[in-house]
Image (cartoon, rainbow over all chains, first blue to last red; front, side, top):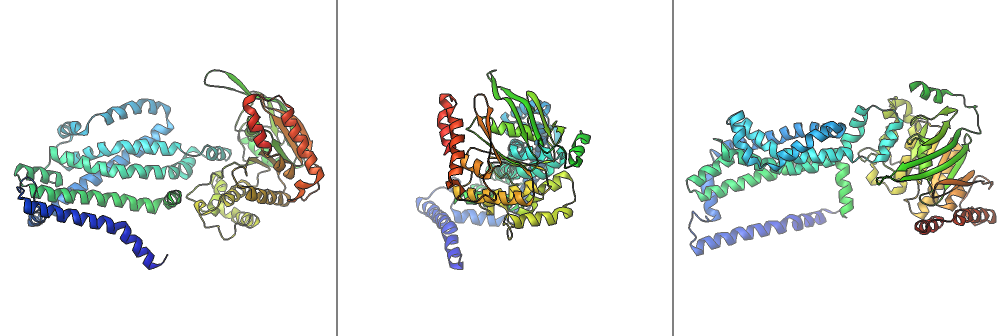
Length: 263
Length: 284
């Protein structure tokens, strides 16, 4: 493909979205300006930018605090979810015992668990991570278990003639086979981890973007709330694309197959 | 268990050649979910000689794939016994190579690594088999694609990789379950000829399941004709057409006679209404 065609595709893919967003922001600005909308109700984008910029010195601390809670929760969910999925796949007993618990955990709103965790683990980063992990954990377990069991039966028939150990079949066949399933759950899990981290910060924290939103709301600083919200969505998008990038590195075969299917 | 396996490997090659594979009085029945007993195979007796190319042909539901799975050791018979190379078959053995209807390659591995997959699973030294893998790649015309991933290959090429994978550890018995059924007609013919070419170069006992009568006759030393409900062998027909077989042979009178005879055997059976359409489709 020529550079020009590539450039054209870029313009079509991102240009349209970009123009739409810029247009919406301009319209927003115009409405606030001409309609004399009260600042506490809907601040204009220019004001949001100004007020957010004015607290730039403290923003990195809060941004990083939330980022750590998200990543910590995400990896905690990964580190517990995958082994649990393996246990469930290999042991019918564990499957019968664990699945009902998982469903129970999943059906309880995590906002309701957070105060309890605060009592158990205390106030701070650890409990924020744990809340984020409880939210992100469920799809990882379910999808990984599905992926580990999705290996083609003929392939397992083949491996059984070779007298290979279960461990070998797991490493060489089942685990790589489940990777695309794992990654599709990780993309869900990372966005859920952001929600979990913010919920935790709402309930008990002295740092983080969630805390910042809460305190701006207490002080009726609506413009600041919008600014922090924008930062939060930026954080979510960055985390999401980081997962997509790692997926591209680790399972290129899967992406090229799904691209072929889409074509 | 280990003892039984190694003795298959080391058993002398000159041992009873007539019954390299022996199926004696085998029945296979299943219990369905509703508790009905379904007989998939009844009273099957079959002997396959060393280095023979045998095809199983019949409509869907005649038990040909079940019989293949029994010979591979992946199913156990409800009655009767199976012997391979003079040994009673107890479980799947490394003496058997398998090719399925779908290639079932590992999508993250290159062609070469897919072919070497059995060696790795067997725990043998990869280096010892590199040469053989490369010879196989040349034999099936995959040279230049060793480093390609399966998703970059056509269906026919993927199936070629699957054939190499089944041959790389040099099993004596090659079991193929409708290996070309998912391919287009032209690729199918091409691969059939390639398979015969491989078979002449590295003598193997081949059991090949198909529902194409033409394919069955073109490839085989002997066609085993099966009919459904319950699955059984109705006739074994030795094919005395000259070798090497070539495309175009199917237009000869001798060939047509075989096809007519097999078609007659399959359709003369009072088939249950549900099986009728499929039987016709299979004969096409």
